[in-house]
Length: 116
Image (cartoon, rainbow, N blue to C red):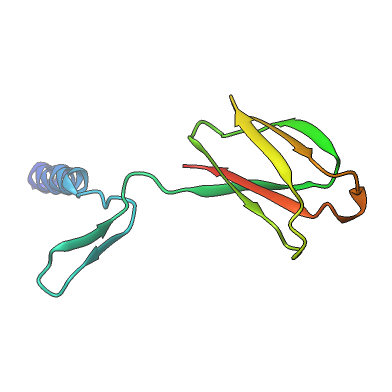
């Protein structure tokens, strides 16, 4: 009797273990479907992230950017309506900039960068 109960418990345990292993994993990402179930948007592969922002408030400079293993992207924001001429170069994850004017008082350009 004890042997039979032990074998039944062992069989139930093995069955539960197999059922847990077969559980399908839910993929990460975002999928949008229309009313017919067709995929309209699928971003399950790569999503971008903001890594940092740098205030370009000196006449010129150079900074190493960390793309954290991804492909680098960037955006330049002019929070002031005075759009000063600035030369910006990003090469091999190194940001360099140079303002083409001499008035350092109004250098208000923000460099926002990230990776995807």
